Image 1 (cartoon, rainbow, N blue to C red):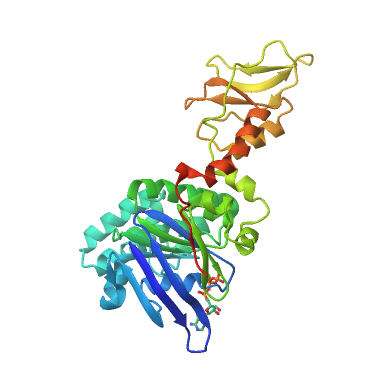
Image 2 (tube, rainbow, N blue to C red):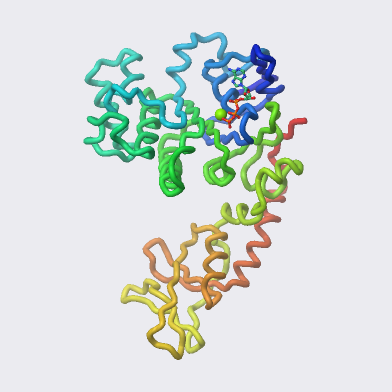
Length: 357
Ligand SMILES: Nc1ncnc2c1ncn2[C@@H]1O[C@H](COP(=O)(O)OP(=O)(O)OP(=O)(O)O)[C@@H](O)[C@H]1O
Ligand SMILES: [Mg+2]
């Protein structure tokens, strides 16, 4: 969908921002570009919509060389979201979102109707459409930024650290929203971040860059975490590489058995058989809190819960929150050990890694 072919970018002052980049970004998925500050992520992104022109090499979007297209037209067909949302301060939120549809020649009424629809899509109230950007929180402004980028329904969305300036809680919410939206819209998204956890959470593929604009490795998150191409990648992924890998694996395959009876701990349920807490045998009033987990929860969450709980057990529930059984710390640990092997030998085919020199 987006192909970089031997791309170089050298700015007039002599800085090489991107060095011999060849990368294919498949259609319909999130590709995350990560790397330390100044390694050329923004430059790479901005060459796609021609806000920066490469010094040499070719970029194709949907098979078409971007330099053969009118730059303004190209930009309208590619959504672009930046940190701090980049909204027009003197236009209402609704008019900010309607900007591109208006530019595309949709009538005012239709553009606004579309904007109102998008406001809802990104989880904002109709009332917030009448406000000005400064009257919204940082997280809300980012949502408007996303809505504006989606307004022309572009197949490609470029996002440059869109959630970099909001607090961790809002950031997680915005990430969830993006994953939900992506399920619905299936765009081709190129997402830039500094944050490895964000990359692992959002990316179908992660491309790691090193200073000087070198692409070091591009692979699926599990692949990258299990087989970093070199020490640079391993260092960049951080000390908790193994735990991050567990965050990608679910609990589904871990065996479960009936809740223990008559032992040191009792699992207390409500009338609907939903787990409430653990109660120790001899002290009736003590309640040890628990966090029930479903099949879709991660092995990391399961390991965490099994270590946090003095029982060493986790309570497993179905989609309705009803108890299905318990799993032990040992069983979870056993499966955690296998997560690594699974990532290495996926279906016995060669790992899907591109390594650049
Ligand atoms: N217009 C410009 N003129 C000269 N040098 C530039 C220009 N824009 C960027 N650079 C340089 O190119 C390199 C790559 O910059 P770029 O903005 O792509 O990095 P980045 O990976 O996005 O960094 P950050 O994580 O800090 O946003 C840096 O050394 C930067 O100083
Ligand atoms: Mg940048």
